[in-house]
Length: 334
Ligand code: PEP
Ligand code: MN
Image 1 (cartoon, rainbow, N blue to C red):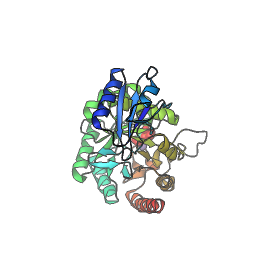
Image 2 (image 1 turned 90 degrees about the horizontal axis):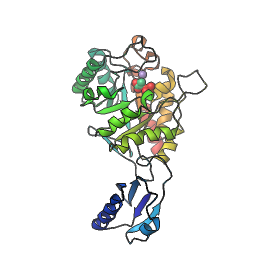
Image 3 (image 1 turned 45 degrees about the vertical axis):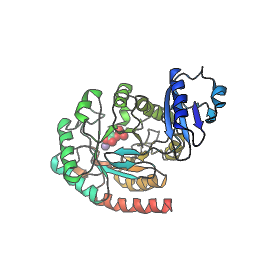
Image 4 (image 1 turned 180 degrees about the vertical axis):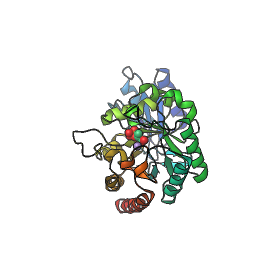
């Protein structure tokens, strides 16, 4: 249920209403927008007297919200959320370029790539230290040592870092990571979602391989219901019947999610296609679709990458693409 308050409602009156609702066992989320204040009620609202609330002098209107995701719903929070990643804003018109290798391999590799992508305009460095691989015989990541190398790259460049956490057991190692990634395979690892929901740290949640948008938003809801509202979504392609590309990039998800949620939405054209030459056109399409940013894999030597070399751009290709992304954004926002 949402309660839209009249403009210029006194804070005292609002507090009285919120207290009264909380006494009925409900959690109240207050969204104070430029034009209106919305109270979002989470919990069992079946016993709440909707007519009584509607009759209050400070209330403009009351609506029942049928979306099963409440905190993530735009109805609860009409304005775009802006997520702060160590001082860098994402969402609500703040577009972010995230780039880096699939996996951290060495100090030379990660620092070199970090410098190159920063020069091309990337604002956040990506790099996997704990890697979810289909085969147990494939490179599993440098783990804690990889996180240490990311810290060095951050120190050298000033770029905040995003890296994937696969298990809540490892969370203590991620304390100083700027943006925690929950990967596609873990999108419905509910224990992990609940654990990161207890933190007060931004989370990049990637869409599961076969997740509907509702399931995707329900996973965001798990994190937000725990009190961590700093969630950024990432469309990274879903599995369909076609196998020319690694996945099928669901670009319609961007404007659809835009309607459904206030959370920022990124596009990852690298995992969506699996093929480096398809990354630039899909990145540009992602930017044109209204995404709040792009996450792209970049490697200094894709032929010898320990993971996902086939979909990695070289730093030169990334720099060229970045310029085109800027041009597309300018054209779309004109
Ligand atoms: C990644 O970004 O490194 C990754 C493994 O992506 P996904 O979870 O989308 O497959
Ligand atoms: Mn990868």
